[in-house]
Image (cartoon, rainbow, N blue to C red):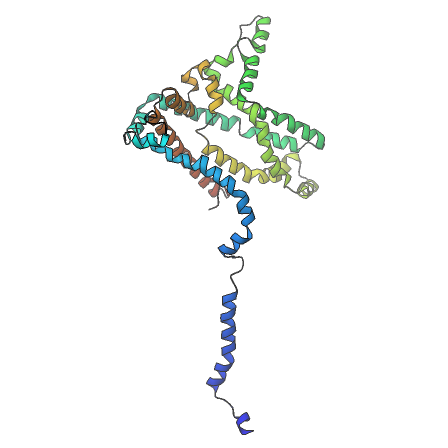
Length: 344
């Protein structure tokens, strides 16, 4: 009895009592992970089916988008494709010229003319083309009847499926020298009008063709963004006395703001690409002075003149500048509080 009632020392008691807690805490720390974090191995096991599904697409992107980047070495060579039937062997045996091709590009006045035409077309399309899909999306979204809305959307984006050859043929029949507009003017005693071969109006013609072909297709993204806006917001605003324009300004446009910022960043990054096939088909009609852009400049020097190193240098300069424009536009989007292409 005496032994059972003898009190233990404070140090021993504390040690005895704290040991299970410490042991339990250590065990818990080994078994538990921070909330929201899953090991890489578990994520692979959990998502292995999705990873297998995306593997073919990833391989295609690597094959057609990233492997060709290795061909930029041609920009630093006097590339001769006739050295061998194998393009890789031709690159390995072509003479190395360093930055000589880049010096030729910067000293070529035709290159700077192409840059000027490209930038002018970009600003015209940014001002005249970019707002039109937004306006069309707002207009279609205001239509009450679903059938009328669906029919209007189908009619507007149908030209997107036309090839550029067909689009240019339609414009030729309307605005060419023997087109409907020219014939109508002659019937009323005026001189004929041939807009298709006028270098002064060519840039506006290109913009009009792009609007007619692709503006309707662009409204799909904005309509998808508008579909996520709750109708309760419009009802609450209407009950508070907000009219149509105030509802559009305070509800609709803020809902479109992230999408507008994202597409604007992508459009700025694509500033130096203003429609290769469209312009190439009409280049001879107005001359290279009005129609030469960077894409056609690279094609003409690389494919037609077979100066591959020179054309590759011009294309590489265009790619680097486009990347810089994307990063700069994305930084501006972050400063405006938008996510842009990627988060901070």
